[in-house]
Amino acid sequence: MDISKKKPAFPITQGLRKYLKKYKREDSIALSYDDMKRWTDSTPVYDAAGRNTLWESVIYDGAVQEEILLGLRQIYAQLKTDGDTEIISHLKVGQIDYCLFGNSNPFRVKIVNQLNDNHDYFYIKTADSSRVYGLELEHILSPNRIEYMVDGNTLVEAHIAGIPGDAFMENYMDTPNFYPTGMAREFVKFNERCFVMLLGDMRSYNYVVDVTPDFDREQYRVRPIDFDQTAYEGRKNHYMPQYYKENNQIIDFCIQLLTPETVEQYRYEERTLMKRRYKLAMPRLNRLLDSMLYQTISTDEKIKSLAADLNKYHGTTRFSKYSHMGRILKTHLSLMLGKPKPNRVPGKASFKDKDSINKSF
Image 1: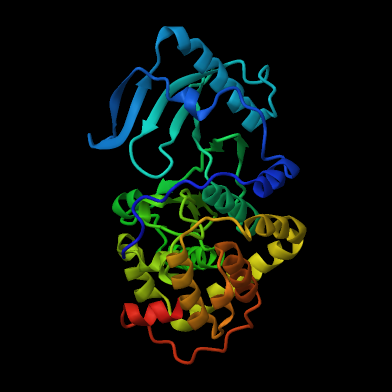
Image 2: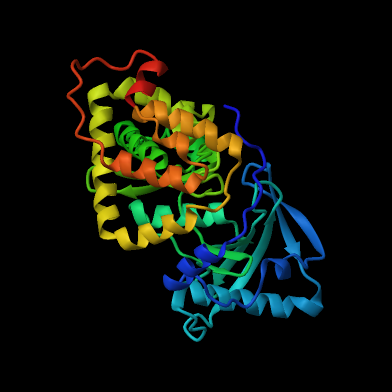
């Protein structure tokens, strides 16, 4: 699938910044993204198999190192304890990594508990409107809560725990505890959430799988970790993880395990839950979408292309009159969450091919 390789960063507008202030997402933090770029040396970070991860562990000159380390501990305190550094006085910065790929070139900060060697992470990135909109939509409409804060052109995000999707497919799906039907069900729901919210580029390395042991089997939750392509791409299929070749291994056993009737049931279940969250958070969500209505977060070409795709999908022409992605997203959300209960799909045969499962998805 041909998607944008490098998306430009869109600045935080006045309308979005008012929203962030109202809902306590904006705060003054000790360090900016530019401060973090003052590192003087680095070494490659390798995974357990000895492969280069394209992250670099960075080193700061002694003149600024103390300032950086203290500032990072203060930022972590704001994320976790509302700024109370006394409670986390036993924590230290274990490592600072810089990402060499992607749109946001984030810094990953490892925080270590000196009492028991437990650790946690958080990230410092450039503040991009697309990403902030994606984070907020995920926080409001999904079953997942997101912790982040913005200060000027700096974005700080808490770590989202889970097994990266590509690592999950490579190393976990052959383990004795793996529950294929449960994962198939969750992937259909994840696919639906992404499409409803127009969260794009959900290739296997842009989401994680959270595994929870239950009394009789494992439960799975798929969580996006990359929100940079929110309402940016120009094709409907770009917002459906099922169409990315990197996810084929999961799609293949979805084809084997799920009937069209079951897929429609899971999709309807997920939209019903999202609709409940939508109603509960309607004032907040409307303020978010209103701040997005006239902001430039995509290109004219992509807007026209997505409008044509969604006109066809929803059986309407109303998207053609919109010149901003915010208008498209607001209408798409309303139509998706207002869809009626699906008709019963006759038959119980498994999917025969990907075209069949794509239609049911």
